[in-house]
Image (cartoon, rainbow, N blue to C red; front, side, top):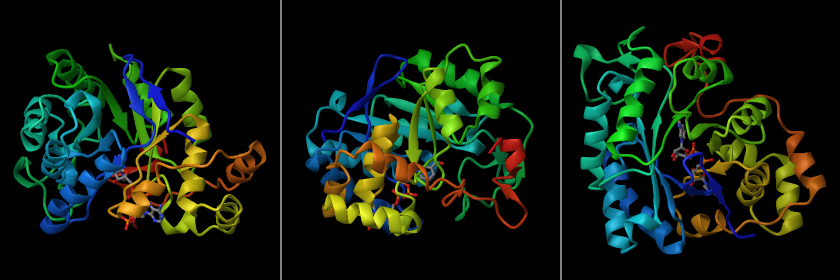
Length: 306
Ligand SMILES: NC(=O)c1ccc[n+]([C@@H]2O[C@H](COP(=O)([O-])OP(=O)(O)OC[C@H]3O[C@@H](n4cnc5c(N)ncnc54)[C@H](OP(=O)(O)O)[C@@H]3O)[C@@H](O)[C@H]2O)c1
C-alpha cells in the first residue's frame, strides 16, 4: 500500500507516516539523530516530527540539508513547549535558528498546560517534567492567539495542537480565529480515542498518532502478533496500517534503517482484521500517563479531559 497524504484545513498535504525524532536525553543520542533522520529521508520519508523540547531540531536541520532534498518536498513539524507559553515568538525564532530552516510546515502547541521552570528560564532541566509550577496565565486561549500571530508572520505554514482532548479543544475554540490544522495525541490499538478522532475529523482537524506502535506493549499483543504472521509483516506494520485505515497520520520513531523502511511499507488490512484490532481498545495510556500524584504535567486527567 502506498502511503497516502492527509489534506490539512490549510490545503497543504501532510504525508500520513512521518518520522518521530524524539531521541532520548543524552547530547550524544540527540546529535546521532542526524544520521538516522538522513537514512529515513533517503528511504523516502517526507514528514519529520520534532519538538523544541526534544533537542533534535539541530539534527533535523542538518539531516535535511545533507539529504539534498528540496525544502518544499519535506514536511517538518516542531512544537512550542509548555514553559515558552508567554514567549511564543522567541521560541519559534529559536526553533528556526536551531534547524536553520526558513519556516516550519506545522507548529504545534505541545500541551494545553502552561508551566514555568525556576527563574522562568527559557532552558529546561535534565528532566523536562521537573517544572517548577503550573501557571494560570497565559491561558491556552491566549497562547493560541500568539500561535495565530506566528502563522500570519509566515514562519509556519500551519498551526495545531498536541495532547488536546475534546474538553480542551472546546475551550480553545471559544476564542480561536483559526481552527487547528492538527491535533497530535497518543493513539494506538490500546488507546484508540474513537470519540476524539471523530470529533476532530468532524471539525476538519487532522489527527496524528504519537507513540503510534504502542511500543513493545502493543506490538507484543497476541492478536497483533497473529496478524503479523498472517500478512508476513512485523507487528509495527500491522498497527501502522490500522492508523492509515482510520484516516489518521502516525509518527513512528525508529533509529534503525530496516525498521524505518518497514514502517513505510504497509499491508492493506481486511475489514475483519481492522475490527479485531479495534476490539483491543481499553483506554490504556503507554507514553504519557499520570505519575503517582495522579497528574500529567501538573494537571489531573479531569483537567486535561483525558
Ligand atoms: N506530542 C507529544 O506529546 C509526543 C509524545 C511522545 C511522542 N511523540 C512523537 O511520537 C514519536 C514516536 O513516539 P514513541 O517513540 O513514543 O513511540 P513509537 O514510535 O511507537 O515507538 C518507538 C520505539 O519502537 C521501536 N520501533 C520502531 N519501529 C519498529 C518496528 N518496525 N519494529 C519494532 N520496533 C520498532 C523503536 O526502536 P528503534 O529506534 O530501535 O527502531 C523505538 O524503541 C516521537 O519520536 C515523537 O516525535 C509526541
